[in-house]
Image (cartoon, rainbow, N blue to C red):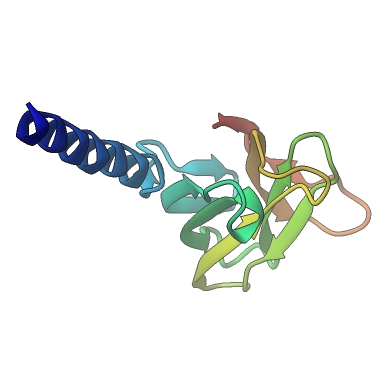
Length: 137
């Protein structure tokens, strides 16, 4: 009976740890973020564990300027919960890799996050942005 209990405890610890590892692994997005002149592709995201790295929403991908003749820069915006957007600038006429985290400093871990990609059209014309996508833990 003791051997059976020990085996059961060992198996539950193993499979419980495997479940946590899957929850903390990278998740790919099927559809890239796109708008006129900008694209955020090869996007992967994950949620950091509570109590570690502020329980942040972490993402990575490639930010591209898809219209290098328009003279406009591209940028990515992300926010945790309903806080302000954080802006991550791209480079004109190029593609760059981005890996960033967003978090809510007032809580132990972030429950929701939003992201979108935009093209900066200058001060006289409004920027055009992709649809905002919401992620939930």
